[in-house]
Image 1 (spheres, helix red, strand yellow):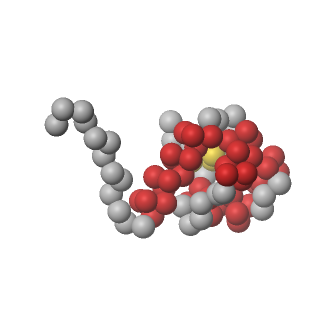
Image 2 (cartoon, rainbow, N blue to C red):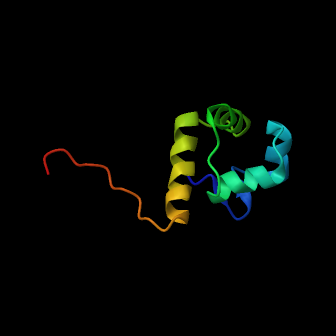
Length: 81
C-alpha cells in the first residue's frame, strides 16, 4: 500500500500528520517526497501517528529516496537463479 497518494498520507493531510507527530509540515513534506530521511526516533513517531509498521514505513521512504535520486530500485535476489 502506497503511503502517499494525491496529497494524502494514509488518509491524513501533511498538516494533520505534523500535528500528530510534533514535526513541522515542511519536515513531513521532505520525508514524504524523499528529500530527507527520518532518523530512528522520527521514523517511530511517524509510524505510530500513521498506525503503520516502522519497518514497512522505512522501506517505503527509502524507495522514495532511491527514486528521487533517479536510481532504479534494486530487485530482491531470487534463490536458485
